[in-house]
Length: 340
Image 1 (tube, rainbow, N blue to C red):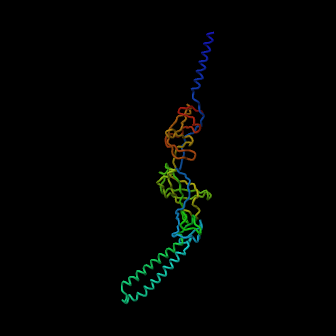
Image 2: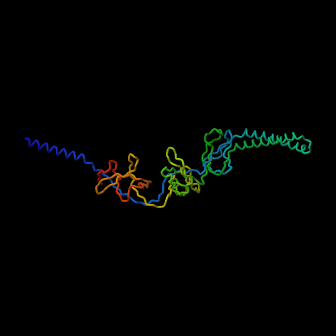
Image 3: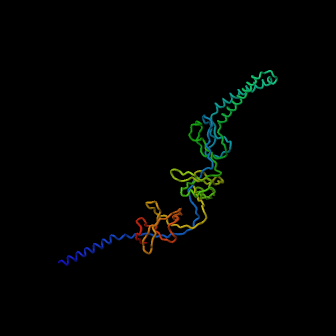
């Protein structure tokens, strides 16, 4: 009886040890493996851009009053000196006519007394008074004429009316927006936002190709002419402008386009699938390198560069041909066993 009892206890202890050993064995994780590849790249960078006019001029009335006529609409091409709108000029016209009458009176008195002065029959102080009256009359009529001309709003240059924010009957100075915006689009800017880790690669003179989907993917050539030096406080990006010739005025402000900047000549770089790269608590980028013979993985810190479609450039930390985990890395840890 005692022998049976001891035998039963021994079996129970052995069974428990086996179960405990099974619990301690780490789980084997299913993963997919990818190889570190050496690929050729042109070093180009891609951005989304927006077309902007090369020049935008707000046109304002120079006098107060009620708008009488508006002679152009948004989208109209205008030439330098063209009349765009008028303000009611009743008061200005009356002031001009009054000063004109005073000028004629002063001019007539000057002409009549000039002969007397030349003959020596007019005292000098009276002649100085006549000259002063005429000069004042000339200044007054010039001022009145200038105020009358201000009732007409003319285009300061050739261009296109980009926006119209005025209608007849409105006060010329009541609108917070400029009555008209004159834009020039013979050349246009394509504005892109460049992240801070790439702004150092930008410089004036870089060539760019611009593809516009709204124009059946037509491609235009441009050159970087403006590189921002202050980052946007929210997006932390820098503004870069590309100047593009616009034959036929096909490019319109507001069009969205794809921008490709050729940075350097062809070069060889190492790439890995972008989903294979993680970040640890110290904000270091890492991958799990697979030992296919021992079927384990080891965590390795790497430095990354730019994205290359679905891959990402590896600057340091890996060699061509090494195997890394590209799927199933969420439950992995250093020296974890894997199967693939």
